[in-house]
Amino acid sequence: MSISSPGMDADVFEQFIEQLQRYVRERLLPAEQTIIETDAIPADILAEMRDMGLFGLTIPGEYGGAGMSVSQYVRTIHTLSYAMPAFRSIISINLGMFASALKNGGTDAQKAEWLPRIAAGDIAAFGLTEPGSGSDSAGLQTTAVQTDNGWILNGTKRYITNSPFAKVGLIMARTSKENLPKNAHVSAFIVPLDTPGVTIGKSDKKMGQSGSHIADIVMDDVRVGGEALLGGELDKGFAFAMMSLDNGRMSVGAAATAYARRALDSAVRYATERKAFGEPIANFQLIQQMLAQSEIDIYAAECMMEDVTRRADAGENVLRKAAAFKVFASEMCGRVVDACVQVYGGAGYLAEYDAERFFRDARIYRIYEGTTQILQLQIAKHMLREFAAAN
Image 1: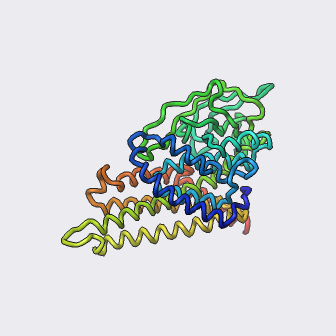
Image 2: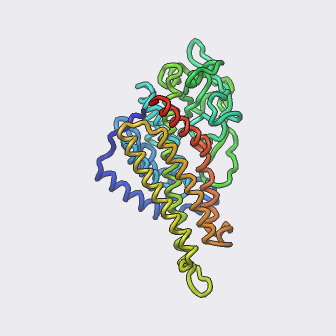
Image 3: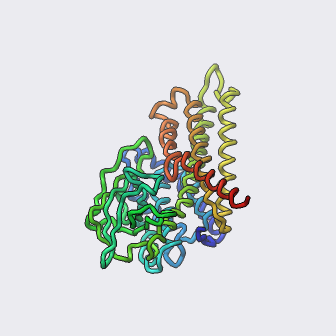
């Protein structure tokens, strides 16, 4: 069970959301073309995002954060994600993955050292996926060997978001050669990425999501102290790190829902402006059907988002519902961006128009933080386990 914050004052939070909506509209949307051309978020925008407290949304106030509840955090991510995905990506890994695991499973010393730094804007990475394993943690090959004064890590992590500019990574490593029950052979380690022996690979070229970067983290006899072990105990930190995936999945679901709204708004605008046979194509019933179905799908995802985050704040185990939300929202976003391209027609296939970018950007939502197929298996497994326990 994730440990949820009571959250910000409701009125203060609503004022914050209004401010963020203006910032997205007036600052982030106009900056998108620059980010597409440079493949980087401008330094002045990153500084503004830090000043707004966006890097510390869920971190408790005593560590310099805003102390948002799960529902407030996910709604903030939803608001931010109307803009291109790079803005969410750089924040969500910090909070939904690194800070969440640290807040829920770290020692007091680990929290005191790292949470204020994250809240102030240091970038973090989450190192689970490897060249030979992703969803299958039992296949993880990175090792952590205990020494008299700490640990030695060896291995390679792949597709690690933020790694080209991250200051620290939460690294999953095998601490036993055997595959123990409940992944007890894996622990989590806090590794500063300037530690000798750590090499960051070249940023990978991607289909979409300009400004968001992924790369390998290669560890060759990386020595860290005993304090690097998340939670201070073997096998403890991995469970908290995996628990943080619920937050990550809700964040991706919120992002996919917001980006679908962005694509639908664009399609509606284009349909009212583009004329065929002497009238706006918005007057054609099959165009209206695509727009209406997209609205229905987005509304369903918004309802799921509200429900799962409310349950998370109430302390419920939302593993299954967070997975369901992420699957539905990411698949829904794929349908909506496809409809957007269709509404644009031939123009939707041209890089000159946003519809083409929306289509490319949205494809990854069905893959990271658990592919649709893996999450479907996970949902079914928990359903069957609950049935067996009740009968």
